[in-house]
Image (cartoon, rainbow, N blue to C red; front, top):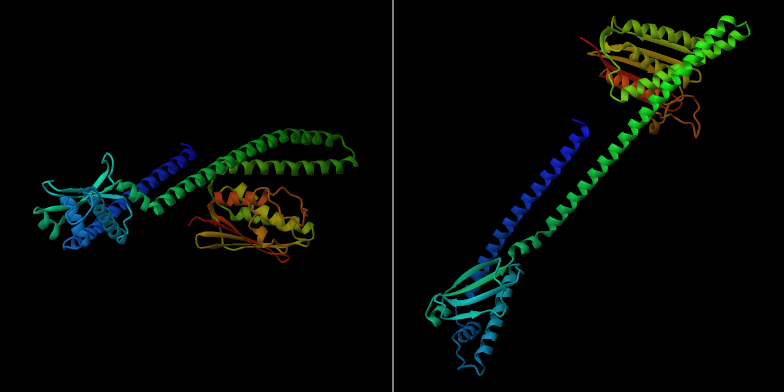
Length: 421
């Protein structure tokens, strides 16, 4: 299965899981809101029942209205009931607001045999999604009416009311979830777009370098044929051509190797080997090369052997890249290589007295094609592939590359590679 399908699967599972968790939290929140609402209604019921327990202006007015007795009041029965409803409605609403309940409500005051009934002026049509909270009244009304009396409070669409109260949690959760989805989608889209660009670039580089190998081989062959019949004046020119063809061929191979490493192809086969003799030969050859250019190169290889799981060709190339950079970026090169064993690790340190690298550019030198500049100019020729190649090779050997540098004072590279016990 391709990695991208795994990533997409993990993303979808995570989003669905997060949505389920948010839904469960919402359910818990609604349940808690219902419990809290019921508790507040219990307190309201107690307060209302106590207030309607004794005879007072409110209870007397309501009692006369429910009995339809207008002997004390010079108004019609309907007017008396409307006034009683209005006062009782205001009284209940005040008690609800004191407990923080702002939901619409209706009520019915009635005896249990329904012989006396007083309805509130407003009602819920259809009576769907209605929650009822009956309050048993004691004292004045049961004594006045001679029967058990109940004040029934009704609330409609409490579910929507609770959701409205939880909007401070629900809407931010939904917005954050949408934001996470959008961000991850953008990151994945950008990642796969860049991945496709890198793949296309590597394919282009591979095709180009393979095409370049043919004319390079033809030039080398033609140079060899011309060398057989060349005179003394022509031989130095042919030597320069062979030298430059060799350099070009080396660069082509380096690009191909780096592209193969980045594409994940198994171009490195690790085998058990004592790397010290190879490192000694590499240092001896480099010392001769530096001496020709009036530079100084010293090396110190401590220990009897360096037994590694290694691909000698690539590991030699990686170390040689670092030495070559030290020589190129040092006007009067003084280079020192030190190798030693530290526990189960081989440490290779290369120090030079070159121009150094700023802290800002030190973070970028291992990027492919990146080169340190001097203003807008590249003072040393190259392709920005060397250190990228070094990092890839050392990583394939299970090691790591560290660099410390100071401008105008030099650079130090430290390679750490696991060794066999």
